[in-house]
Length: 387
Image 1 (cartoon, rainbow, N blue to C red):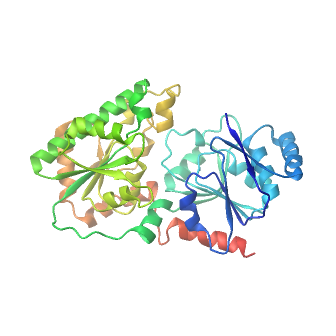
Image 2 (image 1 turned 90 degrees about the vertical axis):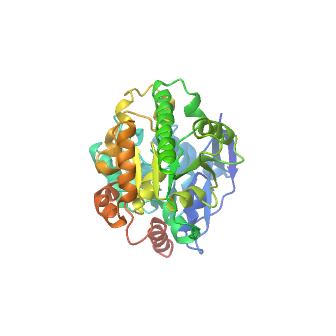
Image 3 (image 1 turned 90 degrees about the horizontal axis):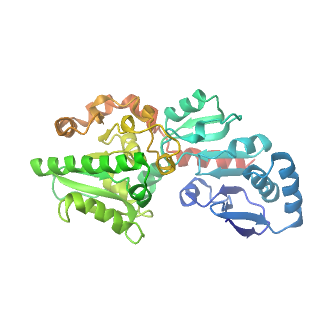
């Protein structure tokens, strides 16, 4: 049950919908703009004023008992010039843009979207506000589902842009030895799920890693695991057990995630090749021209939305994520011969050749331009707040 959370009535330039990702969104705000995060994760926010409850009743009468009604009443009280969220796969930002045309509503994409209910209308009109997407792929999915978008920006990943422009300091390697980074998709929910797709997915990850171990032993190359969980998290030891059962304690270098330092981004950037079964980080690294390799796992999955854990994790029968990837970076099977040939070819390929071969894929899936997303959003918000 969601807990009530009171908000003091005050005027803000920028309102952030939910605290999820708010630490990254704040890189988008000019210093002169004051902001406030409205929590909606297991919370039921309300403003301590008579006018709020009056507005809430009016909004419920118009929009029903919905997030649109609740958030509209909050916006009427806080009177922001900008409303922004990192939860891009929601259904309230587009409708609220229509309700409050003078307010700038911005959705920032936080992960790859495939087989995602965000782009299914479910028989209702579907709309999006100003939407900062990773690449052209998501916009095409919106159009395919007859959704509308106020304005779509194909700009790449917000977090990768922040990492490269404000956090990253290159580490000088002691030697020129090559290493391969495996981006972990592990979660206890996936590992413990009875969904047949989740069971297949975890087995596929095990076999993928066994191929990686064999390649490492045959070619004297280091394996680095970019762990999904943080060292002090409840899931970390379970994730370690999963990989140690394959690589042993000394067969790989295990790098715990550190959200603040964005350590997984650093691990990927400084590796010779990044591999994974599925990962948004994999595509973020492709966007900055790092060599990647993934496998088309979707063809082996069932098309069954009743598998709730699998659908929530994106473990679905939807091959659109691979449609525009060149064959050089996509495995079609777990055959070790194919794995060996493609890994060797990528390690030997020049950076210029790789960049040229993946040019169109980057435009589709992770389209970084001359400016990073946070820089473009910053200018949008600054112009709006200065009016």
